[in-house]
Image (cartoon, rainbow, N blue to C red; front, side, top):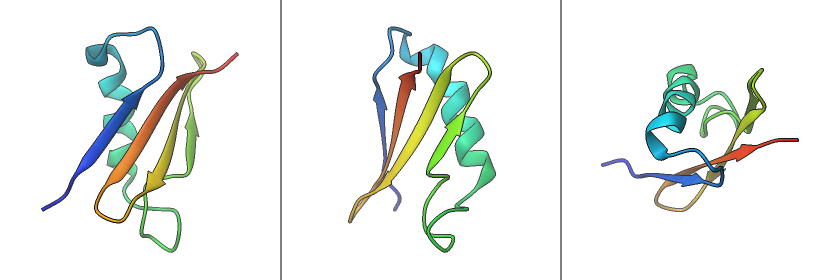
Length: 66
């Protein structure tokens, strides 16, 4: 079983940040020797998704940059 924590630190509702999450997950586990999702993915509109690998879950942190 997989567990994913989505930490939305923007003013946007969750429904609007889910496409960013889907994009990052769609890239697969490409960081940390293929153990975790991309450390940091930025988008042209200023949204950034950062990943953390916890003991029992993945965490994606969504932030508005700038």
